[in-house]
Amino acid sequence: MKFQARRKYYCHNTVYGSVLLIALFFMFLFLAAVPTAVAQDSEKLYEEPWDHSPITVYIDNKDVPSHYSQSYYDQVKKALEYWENGGNGDLDYTPVFELTDSETADITVRWVENLETIEDTPQGVAGYARPYVRGDRFENVEIVLEVGNYRSRTWQQYGDATMLAISKHEFGHALGLGHSTNRRDIMYPEYEKGEEVNPLLLSRYETLLHVVIFISALVLLSLGIGWERSKRKRKALEEKYLK
Image (cartoon, rainbow, N blue to C red; front, side):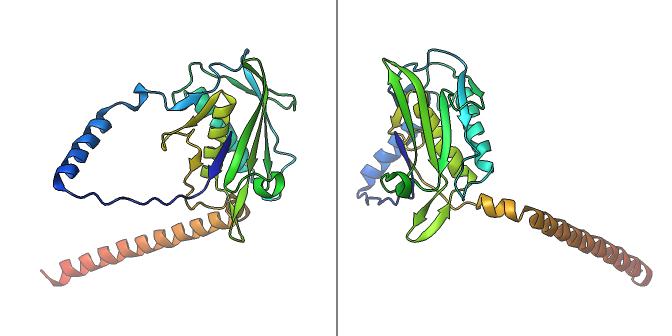
């Protein structure tokens, strides 16, 4: 149960013939009108893998790699809320999670620097969920997330949006869902990562950023006040000399 965070480039075939174009257009309108909730996109590996509630979760934010960002912890919590609020709509039950400090929790979450170099996973894999199963129930699930990857020889730190997407996906596996064939589904096995702000740089220069924003606001306010005064002065001169 692995999740890949990488960019994909797609080729579009050229379609010839106006009749075919019109047919495709009306087919698109028809498909767009069909509710996406009619059919479930994610494969269900287990109908209800947990025999108890709440499901306890331990998030290891202590034994972390060098590029770990404190904001990643919040992304995992958001992923838990996502599934508690219905997720992608493919679960037949409503999970309830409880955060705990115990490493013997039902689900454990930890981060590594890079899965390819540390655990020898295939290129592009950004996280995985490893369930330990007895019968048709989960005893516990280990979720491992990486904090970034290499593009050629350049380190690419994952932003918060990417970490949230990876976390949602792996928790979907921890709740019994398999992969989806729908590219818009969070359980689709690949994520098209966009350009994001490096959360480590953001936290490091957060104070400086606030100062810059404050100074910029003062400059804009000063310019606005000066412009307003100039406008009033000009109006007074016009009324005095252009009667």
